[in-house]
Every structure is written in C-alpha cells, then in structure tokens.
Length: 102
Image (cartoon, rainbow, N blue to C red; front, side, top):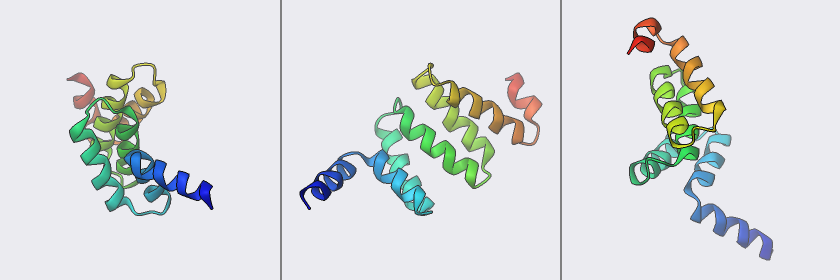
C-alpha cells in the first residue's frame, strides 16, 4: 500500500504524467487543460507540448498539432519524433504547401 502512495504523489507532482494518464482514459478535455497550464508556465516543456500535439492529432486539429509538435522540437531539438510529427501534421492540413513556405 505504501507503494501506491508514492505513485500517487509522483502523479500529483508531475502534471504531465497526470495528463498522460487522463489521455489514456480518453479524458482529453481535462488533459488539455492541464497541459495548457503547464506550457503557459514553461513553454520549454517538450513533454507537455508532445502530449498536447497527440491530443490535437487525435481530435484532427492538425494545425494545432503541428504547432505543438514544432514547439516540442524547438524545446528539445534531439526529439526527432516531434519534428516528424510536426511535418506529418502539416501534411494533413488544407493548404499545407502555403504553411510550409512560411
């Protein structure tokens, strides 16, 4: 039982982990709210941007997904997955040629 307390404490202290758990439970609105708060306080939080991107991708908000993945990649350039997902998201948007030319 003590182990459960440690897990719950870590989740409460790590809002991105809490949001990830909510995403797994398909509670996307709650997860989005938490993640939006996280990136508002720390725009360099690549994990939060990645999770937001995944939510946007799932809900087919591809422009928002591309922006979230782009920010994740900017925060952590070694995250090749973020860069790839940003490109894939842009490819799903109408007028994607115009977006990539900017």
